[in-house]
Length: 178
Image (cartoon, rainbow, N blue to C red; front, side, top):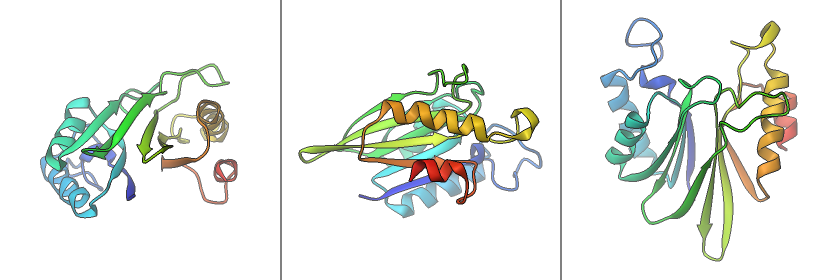
């Protein structure tokens, strides 16, 4: 099973081919990323910062993959998508609108795919945790931890957590995922 995750940065290129940050795809960046994803030959592709369902569907159609899109929770422009190879038995649940222990929804996305393989199943979670960008006192760590607590209350092991964690490997966020 090959699983890839990528923050697509709204398919605008990095730095932005628009010469400024926009939450819309640039045609050249979109094509280049679709070509990259095709070369990865993934069974499952977890994407963050997908601007719209239409863009997610275009990527899925171009790759010949099934796709589910979710708008961001508190910040809808931070959408995401899970794509999977045709023929895999999967169900996707969007938890992005679920309230966390802090009383707000996920800032960005939280999606859980239950993938049935042979006689067992595994949850593959696509998350884009809160950043410091919009956090009080520029400290998003409490929000990220509350988001993970909410996710972990909804899933069972074994689970694979993929995505953009907006945290360093030595952070409490990573420690919580171990």
